[in-house]
Length: 465
Ligand code: FAD
Ligand code: NAD
Image 1 (cartoon, rainbow, N blue to C red):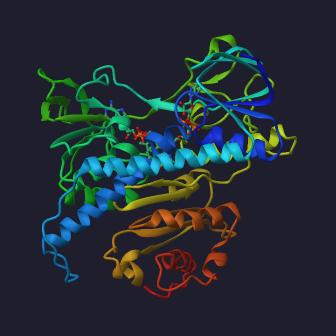
Image 2 (image 1 turned 180 degrees about the vertical axis):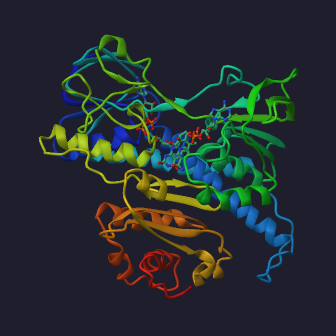
C-alpha cells in the first residue's frame, strides 16, 4: 500500500475530529482522518443522538400512557398504548445511520480523505493504520488526537452479562423489568428516566449525597421530584459492592452501612467516562499529561510541536460541543489563523425530566471569585406558555455582577429548556448586561419570556410576578 503524506492527520472521527477535518478541508488543507469504527464517534453512534432518540420515544410513550389513564386534565381519552422497543431501536438506528452518512458526505465534500482502521503512532510525524486491506502508513506535518472517551468500569462490577454500559442500554430490544443504575449523573438519570417511562422499575445508586452533584441543589430539586413521581427509587451515599450470587441482583451498601440486595435483570453502570489514551501508541511520544487527560494549552497544542489534542481526551467538560469548538479552532490554527481558546462559557444541558441548562457561573461560583452578585429568578409557574404545556415546574435564574450588571451565568430547569441554551450562551458570550436582556423584546407566549423576566426581576422591575 502506498504511503500517504498530508498536512493534517486527524485521529478519531467523533464530533471533535470530524469537525476539525471538515473545517481544515474547507480551508484547503490536505487532510486525512482515521476512524476505527463509524464516523460521528461516541456522540453520534452511542451517545448524544441515540440517547436523545430513546428519551424522546420514552417521553411520547409516557405521555400516551398518562392520557390513557384518564387522569389528564386536557380531556383527551385513548386506549391502552403498547411499546415495541425493538421497533423504537430500529428507528433510532435509522436516525444514527442517516447522520453517519451525513458526516461521511460532509468530509467528502470538504475533500477530506477517510481511512478506516485503528491508528497507531510510530513517531510524532508517522502513524500506521491497520486497514481491512493492509497496513497504511501516513506521514503528517500536524496530527490531531481526537480519540475520545470510554465508559468507566467498576472493578466490583465488570461489564458483561447483566452488567451493561450506556452503549448496550441504547440497544436493548426488550424493556427490562428491573433496572439498577449505578451512578446518578448525566447518563444514569437521562437513561434511567427513559426506562422508567417505558415501564421499568428503576433504582438509582449514587455515591454522593445527591443526584447530579455537578449542579446546585436548587436546580436538581424538580428533577428529584419527578424521579419520585415516576417511581424511581434513589439511594444516595450508597456503594455498589458487586453482583449477588446468580447474577440477578446487586449488593449495595446503603448510607446507614447496611447491605441491601436489589433485584435487577440489568445493571447499568454510569459512573463517568475515561479518556482513551491507550491503544494508539502514546508510548512512542513524549506527551505531558494532566491527570488521566492529555495536557493542552489555549491552542489545544500538546507538549509536542505539531501534535494537538481535542475533545474528551483532553478533559472536562466531556461534551460534544466543546470538542467541536476545539476542532474548528485547531483547523484554523493549522491554516495559519490567529486563534486561541477564549470562550467565556460552555453550555451544559442535562436531558432529564425536567431538563436542566447551565451556562457560566452559579451564584455560589460567582461569590467564590469575589464578585458581589445580583440574582434574578423567575418561576415557570408564572409563565403563560409553560402553563399551556402543563410545564409549570422550574425556573430561570440569572446571575450578574452587582456593580456593572454583567451577566456571569444563567441556569434553568424546566420542560424543554434545552432550547433556551442558545439564548443563554449568546448572552454570556457577548458580555450582555441585565439591561440588555431586560430590554430585548421576547416573543409571547414563550418560555423564553421567563429569561427576560428573570433579568427584570434582578433589576427590581419584574412585570408578571
Ligand atoms: P468521541 O466521540 O469519543 O470520538 C472518538 C473517536 O475516535 C471514536 O469514534 C473512536 O472510534 C475513534 N478512535 C479512538 N481511538 C482510535 C484510533 N486509535 N484509531 C482510529 N480511531 C480511533 N455530550 C453532549 O454534549 N450532549 C449530550 O447530550 C451527550 N450525551 C451523551 C450520552 C451518552 C450515552 C454518552 C456516552 C455521551 C454523551 N455525551 C454528550 C458526550 C459526548 O458523546 C462526548 O463528549 C463526545 O462524543 C466527545 O467527542 P470526541 O470527538 O472527543 O470523542
Ligand atoms: P457523570 O460524571 O455525569 O456521573 C457519574 C455519577 O456517578 C456521579 O454522580 C458520581 O458521583 C457517581 N459515581 C461515581 N462512582 C460511583 C460509584 N462507585 N457508585 C455509585 N455512584 C458513583 O458521568 P456519566 O453519567 O457516566 O456521563 C459521563 C460524561 O458524559 C458526563 O460527565 C458528560 O460529560 C457526558 N454526558 C453528557 C450528557 C449531556 O450533555 N446531556 C449526557 C450524557 C453524558
